[in-house]
Every structure is written in structure tokens, then in C-alpha cells.
Length: 294
Image (cartoon, rainbow, N blue to C red; front, side, top):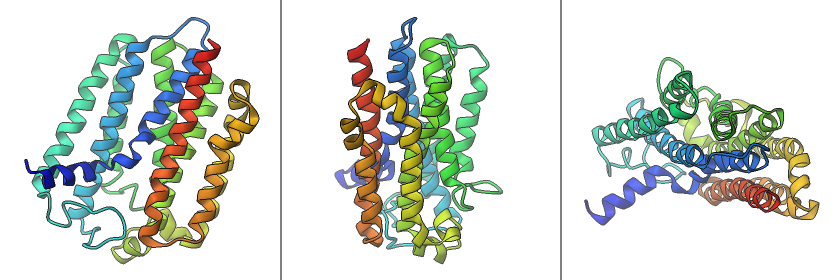
């Protein structure tokens, strides 16, 4: 494989946003570190690998199905899409999607040892979500439900189930944290769809930005960030000084929301990475603080 081909595949993985998958699992690690009975590291590590592979598979599937459904066009505002631009064949992208989701499922099967066979239902739901996001009779990403899917699959599922696999327990504080990190993850998609509003409208995609109007997206981003902060604030300030808590997430999120009102098109792409990094920084700070306290 040539260096150019490798670059195309790396671009298709959307590396700048993979930290969204990692953040939810790290948040669960942080919460598990405060669990009185201790925590199990092996299932936690497997959860990170599973989450990253599932997100890569979702990115591949989104590129493949958007192309085959005619929802992509050359020269779009966002990152270069290899299939649409002719760098990657549709067949190769579909094969990569199936291989990646297959690898994720194999990892997921190993987690049964720490839970029970009921966890297979969660794995099936995640695998179905990978495809339901971009294809099927009602693709979530095309009909304005992408942000809701992100809250579920990048917040509720990874935080709650990773915590359970590491501790064998459920917890209300964990549930609140899972919603918070889901909202942070949804903000990545809000920036993405805000940037792509004109392209998506032109090809018939009815994303939330298309349906609500692009002008409302910076406000929605800010409200989502405020809600996430309020949900996490008691936990954050129990482990970190309030001033540091503000610097780690609320302040960067407010700055990004303000920047969204000034920027358009491809100039918004760096804000995607910044949003994902702010989410990861929040989870990492929680984990470090929790480990230092334990």
C-alpha cells in the first residue's frame, strides 16, 4: 500500500475525533477508581479498544453509505472523503467496515467473562447503531437524530457499561456523568453538521442543523456544554479545584461556541478537534484526580 493510500485510510478513520470514544471510557475509569470495592483493569482496557474500533467502523460505514446513497459530493467543506473523491473504492470501504466491526464484536465477546451473556444484547445494539446511523429505512444521521445517537452511544453506553464491567455495580452518579459526556460528544457532531449545512442541504440530508437552521447551532452547542457542566460539576469539584474545573471544560467550550458564530465552512474544522480534545481533557483530569485520591 502506498503512502498516499495510507493517508487516505487514516483520513477516513477521522483520527481527530476518536478521542470522543476514549473519553467516555476514561470517565468510567475515573468513576470506577472511587469505587470502594476496587476495580478491574482488564475489561476497562478492552472497552477502550472496543469503543475506538466501533467508532472507526461507524466512520467507514458513514462514508460508504453516504456515497452509495448519493449524499456526498466532491469538494465538500469537511475532510476529504476517500470514496467520493475516488481515492478508495466503495468495495474496499465496505470490506473495511465489516472487518472493523467484526474485530470490535470479537473484543466485545470477551467481555462476557466479566458480565454474562446478557451483554451480547448491548453489543448487538452497538453494532446495529453503527449501521443505523448511516443506512437502513431511516438513517439517523440523515434525519436529524445523529446527536441523539451520539449521546446514547458515546455517553450512556460506554460510561455506564464500562463502569459496570469494572466494578460490577450501577450508580446514579455514573448515569449523570454518562449524560454529560454524551452531550460533550454531541457537540462534536453539532460543529460537524454546522460546517456541512449547505452541503447537506444540497444533497437532501436533513441533519439537525438543516432542520433547525444553522444560526441556532452555536447556541445549541453552548446550551449542551452548560448542561454537561452542570451535570458534572458536583463530581468535578469534589476532585478538582473549581478554577481548574472551569479551565478544563466550561471555558474552552464557551470559547468554541463564540468562535462558531464567526467562522464558516472549512474554517470550522479545527473546532471539531478542539471540542473532542476538551472532552478528553475533562475525562483525563477526572481520572488523574480520582487516582490521586484513591
